[in-house]
Structures are given as structure tokens and as C-alpha cells.
Image (cartoon, rainbow, N blue to C red):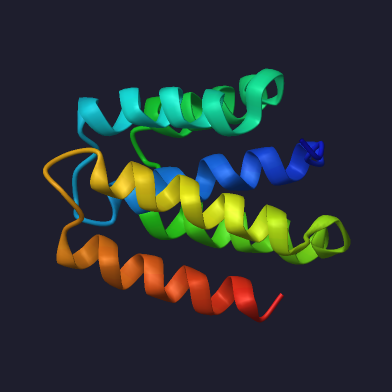
Length: 122
């Protein structure tokens, strides 16, 4: 497995958080699913992503749009580390997180499509 740049591990956590929160609520099942999914996808590199996700979750002011903008900013600054495999990993993680609680809701689907478009432009 290709090692992710530390900023990309933070970005994947921000995108997953924003995806889970895009329907207005972050469910406990979505958090647990993120932990499981990110460990499966990143292995030992998951620690950085989990810490970032938890930090966002503890920040009562953390909004979905702020997390999303933060992630996109990181991705733009570190785009040289992005490749098709890493982009696919991002999409796989957020799709799994979105579907982890009661299926993927309409707001989450819209969010995923937007991210896919933004990711493609990088």
C-alpha cells in the first residue's frame, strides 16, 4: 500500500467528517464506521486521520462546510502527492462512511458528487 502524505491523511478525515455531517447530524454509527473503514484502508497510517476526525468531532463549532474547505485547501496545497489510487481511496472511504448509517441520504449523495467533481479537478 502506498504511504499517504500526513496532510492527505488529515484531509481524508476532514472529508469523511464533512460527508457524515452533510445530512445535518453525525451519528455514532458513522463515527464507528469511520474508525473501522480508515483502519482497513490506511492501516498504521490511520492514527493521524482518526485524531483529526476526533478533533473535529470535539469542536462544537466545527461545521461541515469548514471541514470541507479545510480538506480541499490541504488537497490543493499537496496535490503533488495525489494520484488516481489515492483519489479512489478518498472516494471509497467517504462512500462507506455515508452508507454506514441507514444508507446514503440525499444530502450525502449530493455532497459525494460535489467532492468527486472537486477531486477530479485536482
